[in-house]
Image (tube, rainbow, N blue to C red; front, top):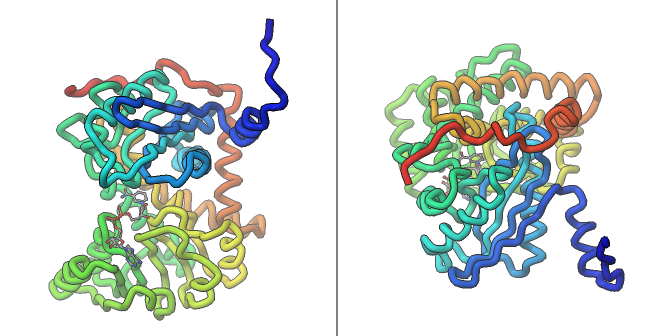
Length: 380
Ligand code: NAD
């Protein structure tokens, strides 16, 4: 007989309401290693869920749940936009990455991932490293984004930077009728793994870049490159980057940088960068639209890394990844055109495109198909 839920329990009602947009949420608890984690599978219409695992000292379990639900939903859109056959998922481990990590904790996490039997593939995100997932991969095959020596694709910032360059080419083509990257001035925020590669490429082809970073080492490195290349580099203070005279703003540092205060100061014609969650709130897409600034949705521009980890599951192949990353050019052009045609923001045009792809596939491929399991094994 079906057990009656205790209707007086506000907790059970709230949780199911909270996760109503998701397929599955798994709480992982392993007292012996101190592991407390939540895995959220948002949508497997396009294939098994794919998404990194973040480690962060969340103040409360509610905060961790909120984060994992939001991030896993974002992955559904990212996968749909990148045209890869994976759905949206994400994991969060509650803890301080500086003090609470151990190989045993990641092995325990790997066991929980394995228990999902291929419904969820994961790898690094904020607060976790490839080494952590080398540990997890001792317990499960459903891990990606690990070093090449372990069968992975290695540094994902290479295709991510490549994708940003395709996004820039598409934007130049759309705005100026010519995809050449050369005679344009770029304002680049952040010269880390992705930003440095983008900046370096632009310098090598003779473009003008204005850059900022909070790391002196990063600034010295790009200045030295600039001195030996045909391009021109100017360094500005961290906060100055928003107001510089440039054609395109390239955010490659942190999220939330497109907000009421910064948009007011922008003089650029477009924004194309790798940073995740660039818009502080979705309505900022409208603010940009009304100001006549073309915004390339971040989740399309920065999909190169995702394309690599998805591709890895069929055997790492760098050439194939770079080929697939090229599609970012066309996706961005289509989003710009659709936005113009429908008189909506570029974000809305991109989101609609993703929803259409999900709708097309629903019913045909609406659950994880076992044969999608990786056709590869790697050293354990
Ligand atoms: P990273 O940590 O290597 O580089 C970030 C850089 O930004 C660092 O040099 C840092 O000093 C700088 N920075 C931090 N705060 C700053 C500030 N206030 N002003 C200026 N510079 C600042 O990270 P990354 O891998 O290059 O990623 C950059 C962004 O792209 C992140 O938002 C990341 O989430 C996103 N992203 C990266 C990938 C990837 O494959 N690496 C994929 C998708 C999205």
